[in-house]
Length: 228
Image (cartoon, rainbow, N blue to C red; front, top):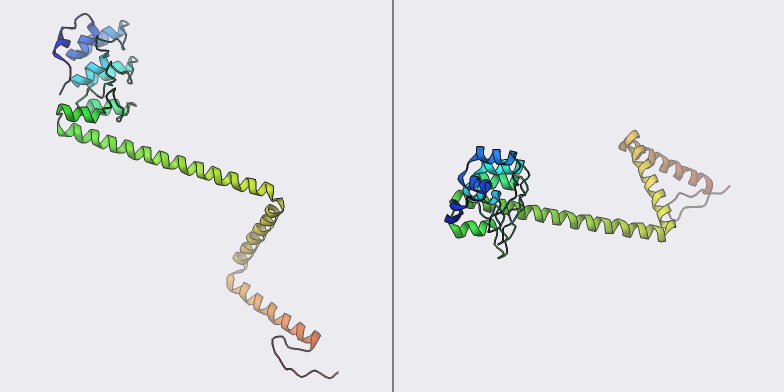
């Protein structure tokens, strides 16, 4: 469904715009190659891209883009080419080349809003709804990532400030971290059960040494004193 007004067909004073309305690819190409401005406008502020998109002439849209047409150009009501478009392939081309699906005109209407008002076919409505949904999800992910980045930066800054204010604490944490790493490597190299057995043997040896020195068994009360 095209959205070009009837009186556009009489716009013969701008050959490139008329060619975009008529869908005349070869003539449009010759005009552009001869130096015609790809961003020339009509009396409503519409460029060739607006008119070609409104007619669903995706090949001319691609041609205009190749010759430097401004995809972000808006006419006097603030509409982009996407606002005037009602064709799946043309919408896909415009969006894939960077035109935002949720951009609003001067009345605050998005391409989806205008498409619904003008009664385009259901495939176009579904496409626009899907693209808007993707845009919203992408925005939410980007916002969430920015918040996470800011929170991480704030946390790191706070930790750094805390370390600068407490150099002894920072040194102690470094020693503790080094000891923990060494212990983990020791256990991994020797094996958990061997380490456990080693600790048990050391404990027994400690008990034996304590008894030899003091004559008293640790952890045992009311023992008779040894007579030397």
